[in-house]
Image (cartoon, rainbow, N blue to C red; front, top):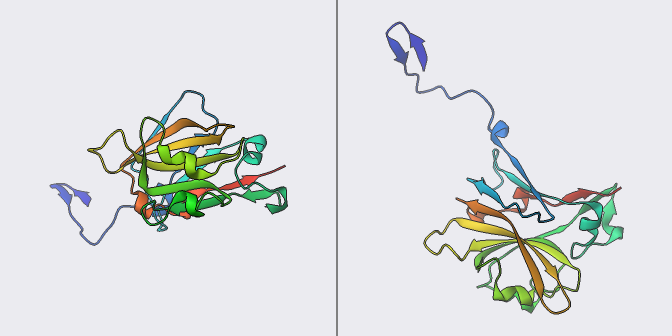
Length: 188
């Protein structure tokens, strides 16, 4: 569109200025719960230009507590934590798909958290002190199908401890990819 003395003139072949990459956002979430729960709306998933990225802000000791952490896997000062995407209807969590894996960050496309927890969390096989960050649907909002929650889950002697870090609105978990979750951490 351009402005002429009689108003705007439409030019259908033209597109707005700016790059799609400029529209990409990195959402940094505090990995240690402090009572604040972030709200993220319209997170863009997939691997196309303009996709958003999630990053959990962790200290070195937080990274060392991640399930699967091994100092031998630090290359050039960077540790890349394991990422997984799971459909609990296609395979059981305790059947080896996640319970025995070195996955510290996971998205569940068909599971839901309800009341900041879920009975299936006990099947994760977490050792005492192991920490994972999990994203799944929000079971407290049954009428809304495109919302999700991000939880920090830590294994304890007897159970799991969960803390809600973020709520997502308008999120397509089925198309969430490892490109959307930065799991690389600098280790000094």
